Image (tube, rainbow, N blue to C red; front, side):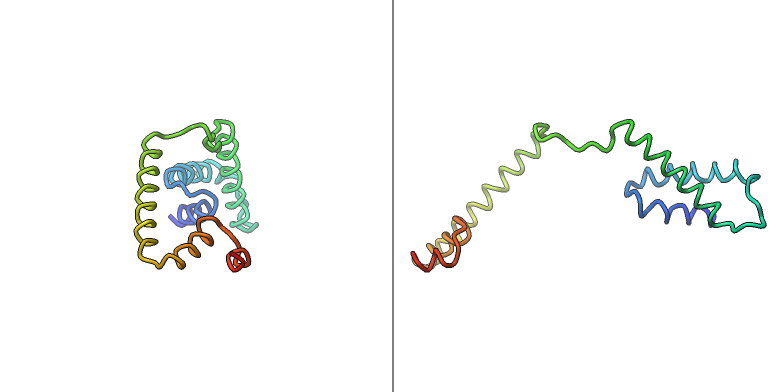
Length: 128
């Protein structure tokens, strides 16, 4: 059981998918079991064990990159539901912004708009 804990700790810093951590832990345990006859008790145990961890993790990475799981979404790949929720959120923020700006005096409102909406510098605002 101690080997499984060490394997999980080793993998947790390298991959963040719980499913992958579980799968790799099982593969590591199987490999340790199959390779136990190669361990020399006169040599340190942890370097031998971590060599197996590294081997299995590198094997996982090779397969991961070969299958293309690492690729990010293309810019033209859109999710319609996300677009609709983003649009609704943007409209809601704009309505809130308009409401808050209407509470300001006209001079204050123009300063805030110039600074945060039009992104003018403080020097440009003072000159205006």
